[in-house]
Image (cartoon, rainbow, N blue to C red):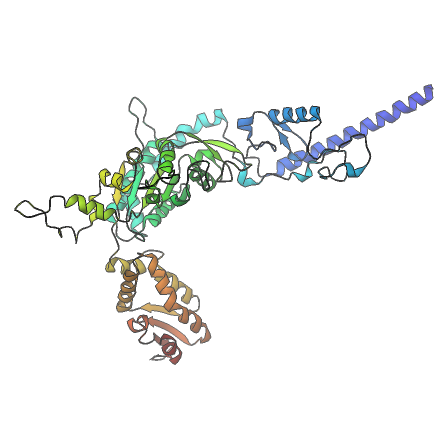
Length: 509
């Protein structure tokens, strides 16, 4: 018995040594994975409730980077005590593999396999916040450095002039408002005076450059930008995106960096589509309710935002975002608003010396006379308008502005086609009459600058198709006759006189 006991003890010692060595090897391999993982800058997330470690508390880390919070672990123990675990074998003592119908436990029906859960994608992981002692040392330095790098208003406008044609007043207003906002963010005034936030409302016809102006501004300042559409927003609980989805898109644009997202820009386009509905008997879930939901976000508050999704119902982690330093820019075309403004301005029209002529504002930019009263009559609630203190309008594009838009900006559409043909060794030119003909066609479509690309794409199709056939072509000049389908472009061969190929004339006719 003593020999058997000694042998049994030796076997147990050997097994314990083997288990210990295996555990050390596994731990070493896991540590190697963690060291080589470039995602150490992200917070760990509970794989059950999807909450980050900053909200769920300290997580229990298991093999395969599997993490569980204390709450989910307690719920698991409660389920095990009751014996009501989905997919768990009905009889743990049975050796029948068929007793596990859901097959969630791998090849071993009685051992829990965590491999089926999979890793959490990076789009649903939050970046870790810096250590308090490190951030306390560099906070003032970072603020001063950012403020010094912030360009003044005239520099911001000069950069906008390189990409946006016209809209001088709008560019001046947005340059000053953005400069004051980020001066407030990066160099927050201390003392009793607190600088308020200058959210903006842009009003202008479609295709006048509202979205493009904001895109250019974000590129100049190098800040996160989220562009969202108000038409998909509804009151919480109904089909569609809730108001917090605008912050989710901003968090995605900031690569899940909460601190960077809290100083970004949110542009809500088509804001006129959430105007209060008139003469409706049903609940206005996409109008006044959305305006009410946006009030708290525009003012500045801590908002629970899903990470990696635009819906709170998705199984994704949640995080807090403070909107106090986020600049909100709303834009919309506001159709029929000019009629409301004109009716207000012509209230005194009639007969007599002090009367106002009914055609006084026909040639004037009526939208520039907009007031809060006009916006309330359009359907915007007073509380919403009050949180957008900076209101400015954009002018509609005329013929001369459309001609400049095609050729003068850095990334003008004509320069894009010239670059494409230059790669084939062909020079592309446009007559002044041809540009005016394109502008006339764009004005007929009444869609602003967006009509230019569709028109140019139409007549450039044959040229982009025919030019690569003949390597002897050196220059192509677009004429007014070609735009109006009365002839073809001027083709110049390399070292030869200009010719007019018959294929272009046939295609144009």
